[in-house]
Length: 176
Image 1 (cartoon, helix red, strand yellow):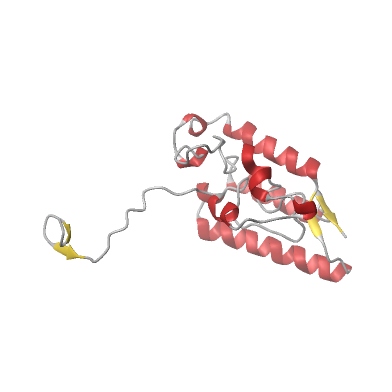
Image 2 (tube, helix red, strand yellow; image 1 turned 180 degrees about the horizontal axis):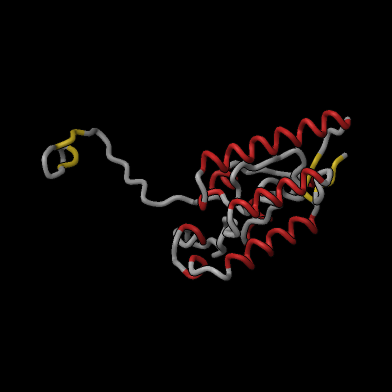
């Protein structure tokens, strides 16, 4: 109706109604920023065949760049506030480690990124979610490669893996 939106009991008057019925989950915001890393490498080009990350926290070729609840992390499969808190605390501890060691640069090593990306896909392949036409696999974005983006292995194993990486002097990261 031209006055707004009518529900069963009421008419809500609006000047403008926006229907936000689709979004580019997990990658859209990052790709929309036109992020360029080392040697002019553009994240959009690198992720054209699907996102790749180490722990959903970092990408090879993008030093000192961390993502919070990014592709490859449990993110949307968990309580988001708890997932954000875990990532922020992990990044904080990593930065403290770097400061104490006199380091100024960190980035995911390519083999670690490849291992983690394959691990995320392997676990997702054992779920029904991988077969669904949903935003979890990017099905709502024309032309987007369908790949299950969140880590479906569970929160406790993910946290344990992140803690082990930190405990082992940030294994899988190149630190300079």
